[in-house]
Amino acid sequence: MFECTFRKVGAFYAMPDLHSHDFFELYYLASGERRYFIQDTVFTVHSKGFVFIKPGLLHKTSFSGHGVHTRYFASIPRSWLSDIESVLPPFFLCEDLPDLEYLFSLLQKESADGDDLAIFRCRAIASEIITVSFREYVKRNDESDDFVKNVAAFVKSNISGDLSLDSISRHMNLSPTYFSSLFHRKTGMKLSDFIRSSRVAVAAEVLEKGGLVKDASTLAGFSDPSYFKDVFRSVMKISPSSYKKQFCRR
Image 1: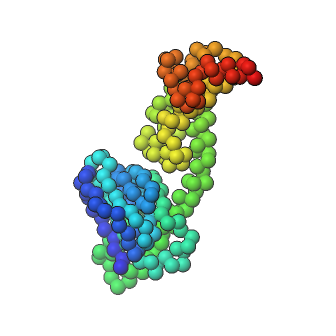
Image 2: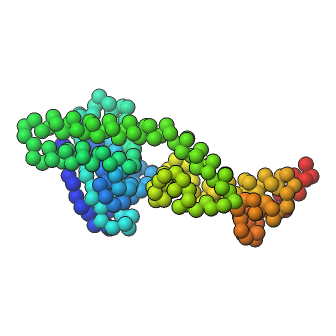
Image 3: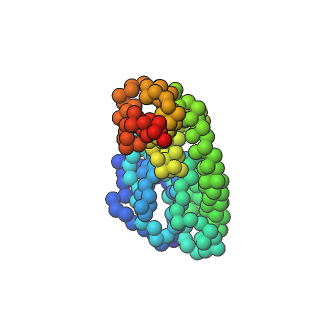
């Protein structure tokens, strides 16, 4: 059965249990922030984000502590997408799609107030929503390597300077919250862990060339030599001085 609704919901509203549907779920977050659990994947959906879920997938939504949110929810009969179901992934998230809000508002209006031809109009609008969102999802996935390469290049060129979340996200022309979520989704790493590993890699290179431990610490962007030694040991499982000696013997 087809339905499209628009709701404003409180900050701590959550679906209590994992559940599944016999229809396609189209979810558009008009404002606010939500956390989604789908199968074994957890991610945060931000304002203007879209989520597509195929029938039969276990999922639920939960609050993220960021105030009220408004959302559109559409249940699309399986028969409507039978021709393209095999092309679509089990689920996907695509952030920052403001143009979808207009399409969802049309879909909601047609489903609530339409005439006898409304169901045909709704099917066309739903197909447009899926086409636009999925094409953008594929496009951004194709560009993900460039995203990670750009971040890595910025980190490397500023390894001894400011590598705060604000500075990196500003360089990438993204909000800090969205950048952090996007980076984690594309790399499977927290930004802080990536930066720490990058700093240690630079320090290791200095030590391999016979540099002093204090120089390795400075060039890698560590302001506290003691902290540098602790971080280096936690990553490399050996102290900086011992690591340098190994290469000197070689």
